[in-house]
Length: 319
Ligand code: AMP
Ligand code: MG
Image 1: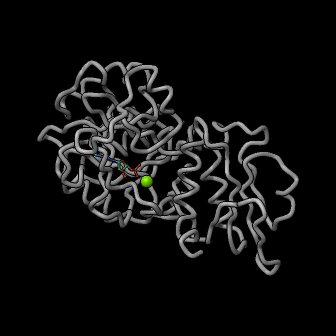
Image 2: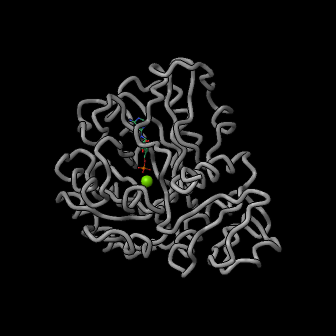
């Protein structure tokens, strides 16, 4: 836990319109006062994030939902009771108080309460909701340690070092229609777990479900080295130094210049937690390319495969 005066200092910077990188349970966030458009614009500049990609607003009190959002029904409170604080982001119609720059001009806002004491204290002490995307350059590997933030971002007023994050991949993002919820971005909270609380929208009604999620691009979370997903029978030239990202302990991992094992025992939750740290180490090593073993696409594996496909999208388009 960082010293209390670090959180105090960071809260003052947020109040004064500055940028603070801080830990959440998912990845490190780059935060600014969500109600101050001049502060929020600095996030887009520091990350080189396109203005069409809306931000998630982080809150520390359930009461903030109705302060920021319209049409908040019973389902939202049911979800909040079950999953908050935690890695579930809910997209809801926004009130005027939320500046357009936060939502990229959309009439909806994405909102969540993070399960990290430093983040919650920071929001509380700053006295405002905090808009925060991941604290990395747009499209690059997400940060799960303060060092990952330092590696990529220079225009940050202060970084709170809260150690390694505990979930390791970004939150599950859902939209709500009258019929139920739809997953916009998979995360460690799975569709099945949410369906246990509220119904799923099985329609293809894009408008009502608010399916358009402008930030969900095919290429994202990419290392600076070329990356691809391993297919059985794939062959890599011997002249190339390969960094292998293995799901679990296996003999094949030994055949490569460098290898990283996401979870020795093949546990998907542990694999999600270790994913970005392992990719950062491979990116920083002397390998020429990264080859990732696919993980079973069930439960949390859906979110891991989503990240691996996006991270390797640029290479996959070449063949
Ligand atoms: P990040 O902040 O990088 O974790 O990304 C947040 C993602 O949530 C964005 O890239 C969007 O895809 C999604 N998102 C945020 N706000 C909205 C919204 N109002 N409607 C739909 N999707 C959203
Ligand atoms: Mg991000």
